[in-house]
Length: 179
Image (tube, rainbow, N blue to C red; front, side):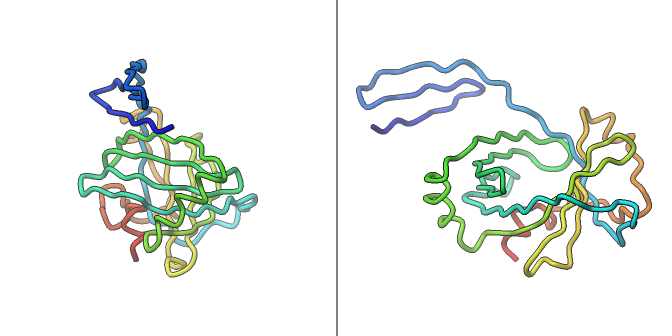
């Protein structure tokens, strides 16, 4: 049984094989506020433990910043949709079964990246420290997440955070996956 979804503003409708239309309630898309920084030498006090291996592959990428990706980690797989660029983005993640992951992952051939992510805190701000692998093994990026734009702009990065790359398209994961 196949069904399709049409999205109009913040509501959706599902059309079944019997041509019945079911309206779905409006959904508020979660907004992500983050800043990204290149990272220099890591302070030894971080004591990085319990990193999570993550592989990401991209199904679709638009020049305006919208992307659809598949993420694999020890926790399982997910389909992620991200819209926007820079500090303020909308991101939705939908869990995938192993069977769905097995079908979708091959479609990302040529648009993949792998990294180990460590969760750390800087002045009570959650930060994901990404250490990339493969041909990106030279790259380390810290992504700080904030509750709102004002908090993001007030954040003072530690000295081992180097250049901010939040607004640089070259450092979007979808572009890095093409290198």
